[in-house]
Length: 83
Image (cartoon, rainbow, N blue to C red; front, side, top):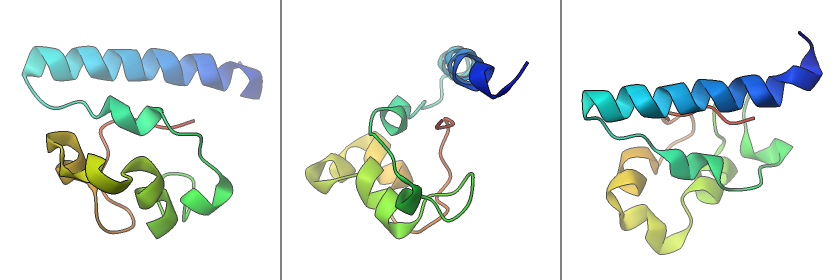
């Protein structure tokens, strides 16, 4: 296993997280996987910067149930992992 495998591994991991969340009746914020992220969107390898929060939760989308769960400050908890 190498870096080339990471995208497939993360996709499988996120699919499993979605299933576990669905089975447990909890929110799975798949929207966090949709944007194209850049280096300025993260403060480290796992936490969004202020710019990253704006990328994942732009404008009116933040008023949705999922958006309300993860808008706000750097390092907000997100149910999914981004590659």
